[in-house]
Length: 118
Image 1 (cartoon, rainbow, N blue to C red):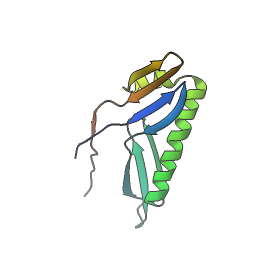
Image 2 (spheres, one colour):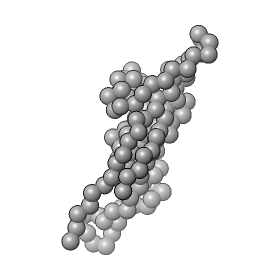
Image 3 (cartoon, one colour):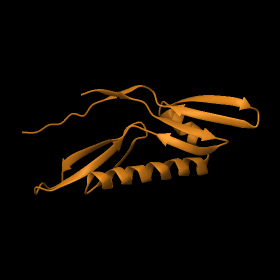
Image 4 (cartoon, rainbow, N blue to C red):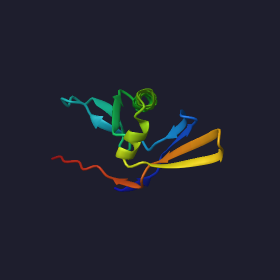
């Protein structure tokens, strides 16, 4: 299965305004298998994954992790470097010299998951 999804991160005057990234939540058997399941949330464009006991818990967990991730990158001054390394493209919008906005856009990605089993 192949999906193309695009995300974006909007910055204004060096501060995070909003972000939208593709996230996939999957139900997986817990280890060791005892009929229990966990939900794994994956965001390949940021190389972040999380989990939870419910789909909602996994989704909230990864959203919280992404928010903290961006805040930490900004605090360390490494956001631009990391985004470029991960293949994001930066579009700078300048309406006035004192107001600038940067919009980071993910590259078109295709990803699929391979599963093996009996």
